[in-house]
Length: 100
Image (cartoon, rainbow, N blue to C red; front, top):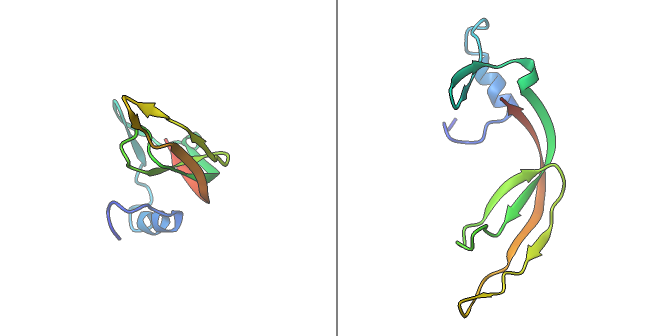
């Protein structure tokens, strides 16, 4: 399994099953490590949102939202140059686990 690939719950369970069962679980935070507690574990059914870009740098990206989002922001012109519209649209759904 690639170290930088998105991890599924099944892959996480498989990996954790190879570790000592009494090992404590910590989350890396801004000020160091802190123990993971049950209140830190959240499940959500979300929507995948595709964005054309944010600051007109022609670099699309995806993120997640708790509700579908579709729309367009017309940027118009700046200093005589037509700027591309900022577009965002729902491209799918996902089940996610949030830790921390």
